[in-house]
Each structure stands twice: as C-alpha cells, then as structure tokens.
Image 1: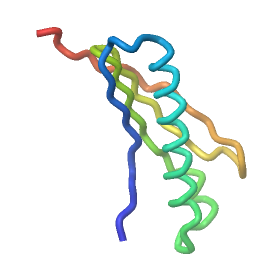
Image 2 (image 1 turned 120 degrees about the vertical axis):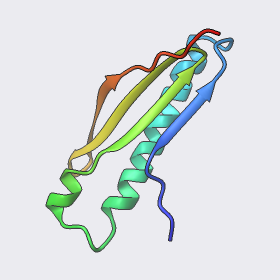
Image 3 (image 1 turned 180 degrees about the horizontal axis):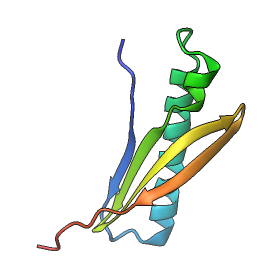
Length: 90
C-alpha cells in the first residue's frame, strides 16, 4: 500500500495572485487529506498522530513557499510557514 507524504503545486508566474491563492487552498486541502488518511491508520496512537507533520510546497514562477500542517486537536489543523526556496532566474 502506498501513501502520499507531501502535497505540492507548481504553476507559471503568469496567472497571478488569484491562481496563487487557489493553488494555496488546493495544497492545504491535499495536506489535510494526507494527514487524515495517515492519522486514521489503526497502528498509530494519539501521541503519534499529534507529532505527525505533512510538508507542502507551492511554486508560482520563481516564488515558492514551504509549509507544514499538523493536527493540533481533533478537527483543528495548524499550518506553519517554514520558508521559501529561491530559484535561479537563468
């Protein structure tokens, strides 16, 4: 059985801020689905579920963000900005 462990989205820089926001929400939704799937496995206890982190990566042109999602409490997810990745322009 295979499990996703990361959510990522890549787009050119042409679409602009609306596309970036839409992709951002899509990445967060994918991260939540991945986290829920792993957290609902029978072999994990509640402590192990609380320390799970799901990384996400979003790139829009040369701009990018790395974030992690955690399950803070049942039904309460937190997202933490980790940093950005600089891509060379040429």
